[in-house]
Length: 504
Image 1 (cartoon, one colour):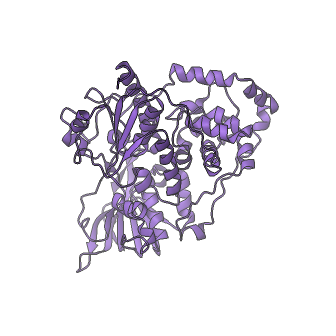
Image 2 (cartoon, one colour):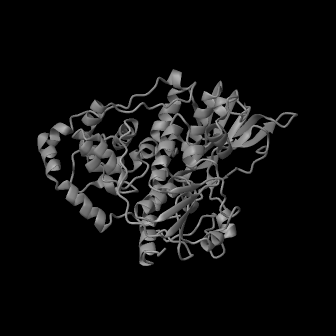
Image 3 (cartoon, one colour):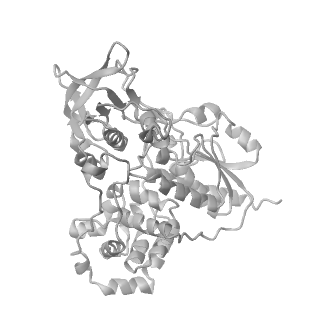
């Protein structure tokens, strides 16, 4: 699935220019020459020791101090073209919030972030800034090391929340128009926040008993504490967003049913909850999990705290995680914390092709995770009771690039070997949830089960229905889902306001 290359809107460009020209920004630029800013070293994020953290579920990264955050903010060159904003899928005014931190106005920095991002404490923790805003940072070209934009985003959001200084934005006058959002993941929550601020009546329908989508069931506590997510969701409630949990759109009620209840615009963000498998022998053995089930049990159902929470979990002694993305990293690091003596990533390409974030790979290596590259399982072997006890693997070598641009793994004939394992997690991707497509006549679907959209508007084939996030992309990042949502929300707002204010 492709998309249009991002460009800043005229409104965003005007906003950035106005901020750049403010007198206080000019004074900050004059206070330190650019050549001196390039000499400041990037401030290291404090981390808990690897040999301690790999046995518990407390957060790994500890956050910047106020002093370190201000020093890091001084590294920003405040360049007029702001390439970092173009690199951000939700177009955060990055230079302004960073300069507010440099100035010591931390709460104002948080408010600036929330102008375009309702979930900054989450994005500051889980977004791949190194391949987005930080990848195009001017400081990276000037000194070789980008400004730590993600760490500063987390700092500002945490500072505001921890001091009880959260300020609610001014809402637009109520329009009386009703919006239904399907799914309370990052895309759904973003649309809900934007449209609530625009004055619309927003209800989010979530199938699970907790809001958050992949943020709550997929991302581990040690990367994203659930108290952070809970606070961000509460912020949306205070904006007026209604959350209806344990409500499966397509089963509890269809979108047609909701339309009959007065909903005039819909945003489909039901995610990619259908796990992929390799279709090799033994995948149905006890002890072979999809990453979706494994992480849901550990994170959402709190199996890591059994028996305080009554979710049983197989605790493997020798655990193999198949895959090389962030979901694979989360799975293998969970396994280590649950007590695995040996926990390893089995990845069919080399380290250079691995799609997981560099920080996650680094943390996993520090925590004792093994990485077995250029290998892939061919079958899983069970004992007499049907439990996995070993896997047969085949070694690979890299051939020509495939459609993804990465070199294609080619099996090495005769290289099979058997490795003892008692738990396997399949983390090789997931597909969009098929329920909405099956229960919504006229909704055009792609060949991979994704909802087809116009990438310029996120509109679907049905008038009044938009979609975004993993339901259109397959498995993607939190911030890309939020970028889809912001684009869709702007289009939905225009549509609803064109209907006029609803009377009564």
